[in-house]
Length: 329
Image 1: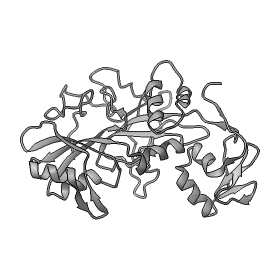
Image 2: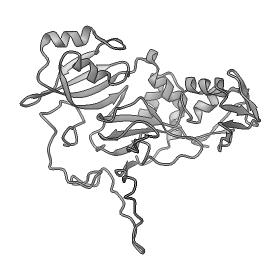
Image 3: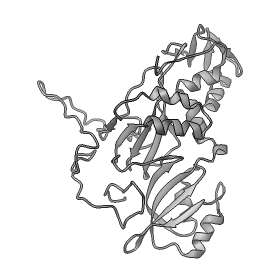
Image 4: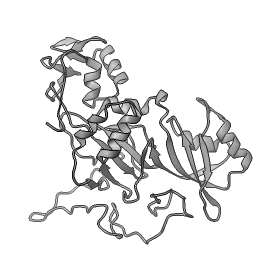
């Protein structure tokens, strides 16, 4: 049966929890060590093994998933807008990337890395904790590529510093490559790559040299790039070919890509979250408006605005990608 995986008997507990999308395996080990997980009513220990007949619970809540079935492996490619957090809950009630994602049965979405509030661009999400952990683990050295708009111009001395290393608060850091990508007036665009994902690392590297980043867009994570058709606020499932290639880069079985399913590629719109207190029901007898697809035409945008046909600031030199015409904040 395509899209269904049978759990073999006697698997490690943390592996099972991660596989169902509760988080990376290392985090699951922390949950178990903290006594948050129980098996058949007893507090579990790190290293415990479980089978399809065991009853699992986290924080006293039974896992509402059949223990012998693995959910269909999915990876979403999402064009995150500025103004969303890569977290599940925010004390200030700000929108998060999880607010409008499709519901999952038997698992939940895990963000592969983070993008901060003021950064837009490519964000991968999966329902498989093992895959998320493999893509984020430092030893995997998965490349991230960013388009960076800088106020001013990076001179050759600064460029060499960015490549050889800059001392930050949490240790030295450097880019793998720095390439100029055009620009007009006071703003210049650069493409940079690095193989780690520390907090605000790209911005901090430029700021350490007295350079101000006015816009930051992630355009590639590993082998997965941002396609031109994927507008800000939209997401899509990775096609089978990209899924198989992505799994191969982290040493996971390519056969899992068959869980993606063939046929037409789904492209969905993520409507902007409505602030709390302003939510209203649609008038009786009327249906709430539904957003169109990313390919609905040149005037379609995820926020209901018309684009003016601009090719992005100064030509970022990104093959197959252009910024969505929004002004940076």
